Length: 386
Ligand SMILES: Cc1ncc(COP(=O)(O)O)c(C=O)c1O
Image 1 (cartoon, rainbow, N blue to C red):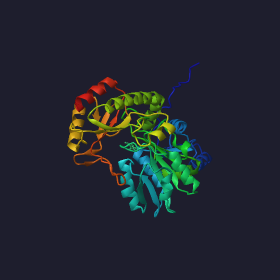
Image 2: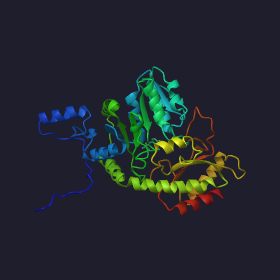
Image 3: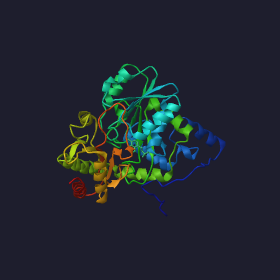
Image 4: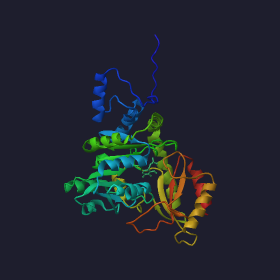
């Protein structure tokens, strides 16, 4: 007797149309899909067996009641925020938020009548003093983009809940996923995961997930359906395959990242090293308490040969020399197998904006440490710094 063909991975399904046997069959699936059921689908945007396999992997890693997808991590941030905002509402956003999220708040959400207020990411339980009756949500991002402040997520969520405020707590868990931080276990309602980063792991896919707890799942699902937010079989397949090895890859990113950060710390042209595992990183103690480890993403401050903070052109010279070694790429999207460098400020303008913090940004350089041999990376850094 012939064996049925079985493969360990769910294959790539491509479908817009889904076919039904009868009106009764369609009617049952139609109702279930509207209610956010993860079972059989009525339309390609609701998912396929390929995206279902990814949903299972994401929910296993992140916890939560349900997950929806978006074509990128930024798209997932937009779906999460559009779930919680309404015209006339007040939104609290950390000052160190991912730059394009700030743009989304300052332009698109403002146009819709949402007032965004930026807050010090180290505010902790003090967040309650910023809440208004009209506050619809508090966005978190921990550690924050480029400056790596670790937020006290449990203190923030506990204090909001203790005063009985209904604000939804949303986090961009780009750095902490998968497995380094599980926000829903710490009182967060909605977690955004750019699967583009470590989940994909090979710099070749764009995909975002949004996970919600039972309180926020219906609203999130309804918004994603209304927006037609979804992904395709190829991206979902690659992200699910990435999930098989991400834990092992992360351990290597962590080991190499720590080795490079430790080496940099001793170099005379390096000031502060903003790596969560070092006490000088704001929120280091919170990271030790709440996170399972670190990854390959951190930043440092470049010093001029005189010991003063490096200027934008000195940073540009360093980055160009580093990129010329071939060991580091100059690019934005971290989390892949390859090492990357990115300055906070370019000669023509800043990559990041701060409106609460007054700390200088000019000499800040972000590194993503990939899976290459550490010795090769250190030799390249030594060449560029000396
Ligand atoms: C913190 C953070 N959030 C969201 C994103 C967006 O992810 P994507 O590149 O998939 O749009 C990024 C990308 O760098 C990020 O660093």
